[in-house]
Length: 152
Image (cartoon, rainbow, N blue to C red; front, side):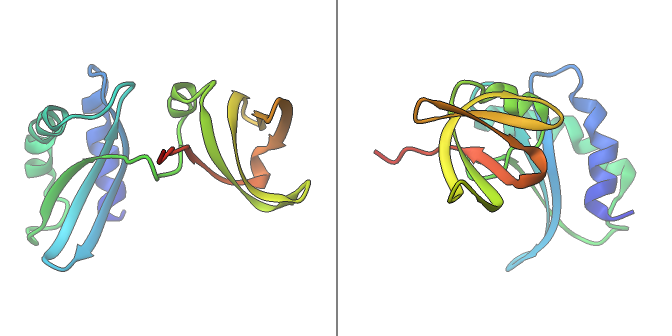
């Protein structure tokens, strides 16, 4: 099992009694060495205090687990970020009735990318309000959905 997968599996249960969710784990090489990056999210915005809390929450488990077999790494705890694709049902719930960016694998109705209001979702499809018109798109046609970022 890869380092990131092993760490995710081992630390995910630690979040069960918190309002913070584990979204992803990466083990990546950066300029200053290997980084174990823990991505977190919650209903409200992630704060520095949340990152410190998670660092303390997972520290003992990581020490015991020793996922890198004593190879040095830098632990980063970070918010998942607005530019990252939504992956879990609780994330889609968070963005219901809000504007999201959608990228499709292929053009549908002359669109491969668009911004719309996420109205509903199921295991099979997503429903969006696109300029006042409801449109339903199968999950298999959607490459990813990210939160809409308004720079105005």
